[in-house]
Image (tube, rainbow, N blue to C red; front, side, top):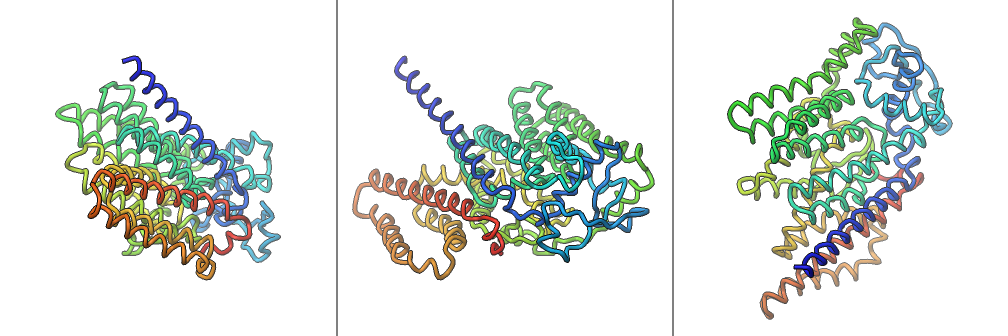
Length: 474
């Protein structure tokens, strides 16, 4: 027993050390060129939150730029050369500044504006991305920790650790998590609420569902699409709870979540009810950017900003993996139901708001995609399938190699690629000539090789993008 205890302690220490190293390296990748990739001004929505929060702190009245000037009684056009964006593009349109600004709830704006104020910013021109992206990098660490915890709770330590590795290295996830956008702000609130809901379902302690509901209310104060967290909690409680407890907990969870929306309404009423009312209902009439091919574009056309398509086979692999987890585990594994409900809840909001035009509306899906990929890798390790490993591995491999070397540059690697194809054929054929135990070990070694190669290429891709290379991502 003593020997077994020592082995367990060594394993736990190795897991902890591995996790800490993952966090540190993920933080390094997010910090790398964070103030130039994506380019400052690629999405002016980063500035909108900083300016609204900064003005709210300074004057008590939120002021920022808006794209729906017709709903405000007045606005002014102002050329604000933050991050020297006007020097780089003199033809860039002026910002339409309104006061009071009610396009979004104040929660995330206060976070970004408060951080900027703490760092000494007092004027809008001082809120460059070098400042406002800093808290997002710190929040990404929290998100990674929560992804590990959630993956561990749903499918075990190995899946949790793999999911953390993926979220820390997949280029789309690393680069997108740098942006000072409200989705990145409420992702940890969503994950925290989900973890607390699972704890309640397992332990039935009221503090868990109450805390989850409070996080849900805060998510709504970050952005109205944060209502997906309330939907997620309601569906989880309706599915797993029984009898009177089901209705009671669901009702009070929704009630507490609704308080976040109520705070937003009271905030608007206290400042300027007439303007708030007009802006709020005008938001429902905005252009519905999602066409009928919403699901196809979501799976096959990854985006980071409004205009920057960042094709990444990892994201497509994530959706395939999620579908696999849902279809193969749904009836057998209650935790597959959890990830299904969580993804479906945000999917409903994603479709409702019509968000195809903006890459950041996709960010809340990424934690669930990372966990799903990790689960599929674990499944393939336990029951190796060479064709599945090859097919799934080629998705990120192709896009990563294309970004790093291009069509012509890849020619020098063609001999290696052909050798790899022969190796795959050999590993696939070996079971017919040797015993199953050895062939299984070879297949596992093949999987580990593919995974390590893909992570290496992912890291190299993140490090490849600087202020110049980012111009060519589309």
